[in-house]
Amino acid sequence: MELRQIRYVLAVAEEHSFSRAAERLHLAQPSLSQQIAKLEKMCGVTLFHRLPQHVELTDAGMRFVQVAQQIVDQVDGLEREMRSYAQGESGRLLVGSLPITGEYVLPPVISDFARAYPGVELQLVEERSSQLEQLLARGKIDVSLLTMPIADPSLYAEPAFREEIYLALPPTHPLAGEDEVDLARLGDQPFILLKEGQGFRQISLMLCEQAGFRPRIVFESSNIHTVQSLVAAGMGVSFAPAMITAAPRTHATPAYVRLSTHPERTLVVAYRRDRHLSKPAKAFVELLRKRHPEVQAR
Picture 1 (cartoon, helix red, strand yellow):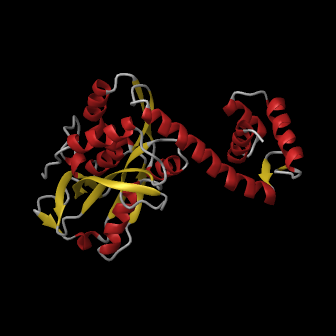
Picture 2 (cartoon, helix red, strand yellow):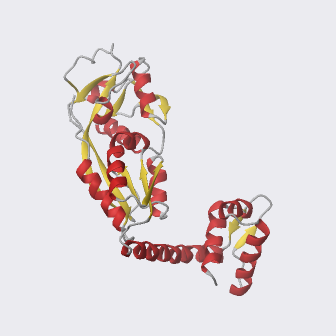
Picture 3 (cartoon, helix red, strand yellow):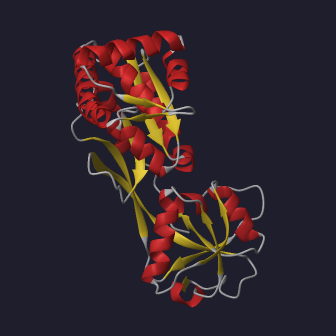
């Protein structure tokens, strides 16, 4: 049994398709099918049910994938450790980030890192919270900037900084001129939130739940700037982290009002508990700690 064959099985299991897995692995499909058939013959089991439109794991296949993933994780982890012993002077660092958070937080950190480690290729992976957790848990990225809470127990999170969450109101809203607002007063208002899978959406829903109501969501977007523009246009109310409220805007903006409970969100640097952090990864985390933005209250 060869490591490359194990990786082939994992790829097919993830893609549910020999053709897609072959494309991802840059192999000819007949060659991939031959290698997996060879492995099945050697093991004396069938790993996949070959169906007309896709493939599914057999019981033996599910057990194979479970153990195989552990083996691949250990091999990948060993490779990372060996690279770290090489002083971190070359290689690649994969950093995950929420798109908007990365926009405001990471540019100075990336600039500092590039000067300190010119031989290390830093790649930024921007996805929504749920996808970043999956990529981190599967070892596809090294570290990630996320918001609490984190669902996956295999991940370790170090607090990076906190920032206050504000209520976003249309400028003409009756409460727009208030110093502070009790969120319970907006239980009957239309809300505009981020789409499912985004950490700030979960925070928004939690705030409403703590205020004693379930928000009536009239519009959803994957972009927090779009949410703010819709609020400014009078379509509903929403929330905004302090970094958004402090950012200069070239068009209409909502009225940002403090909530009476002064809620905050915690941004963290997360990585696998069982993975050794390379020297560049440790340096990136340290630079982030030093460079975290001073989010000012409005």
